[in-house]
Length: 184
Image (cartoon, rainbow, N blue to C red; front, side, top):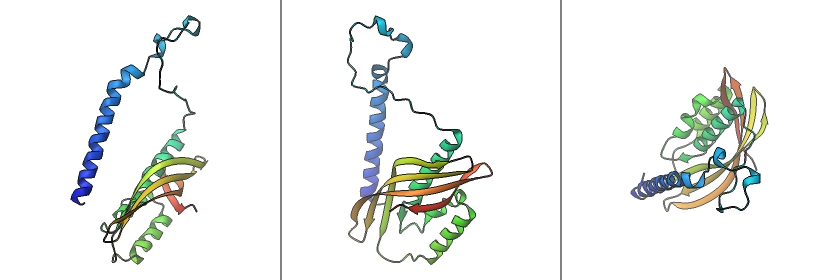
């Protein structure tokens, strides 16, 4: 990692820590316990205006869906991040989360790929995640990604937004990725 990248990462971590500290300090001011709120009839005029939107309660996901989405999120972010200097470590680290058929395809792809050429680095971050299909044995999840692509000796940067569709199947109680394909 270059010195500039290390400094950027350190600054981002410090900024996130500062934001978390500020949010925790403000938590008591923002959140009012439900049991201390007067009934609707007792509220004549509001005494304090809140800029915080009311909490929207969504239907909670089933345990199976939550597990599939967690695997999809982690898999997509790691699978689509890449550095030509890492010898496909991003994909190799995910071998335990792949079905035998996907593992064989990825091993063949790695074997066929050359490591020569100009620098290429891709950092992916999950932006959205949506369950397309779901049952107890199979899940199809679309993962929207922001991808920062750096290439060449000049380290030219580009940002793309792309969607990766993952098909997961449950084998022996664990979600495994069987298909990973880019949506056009």
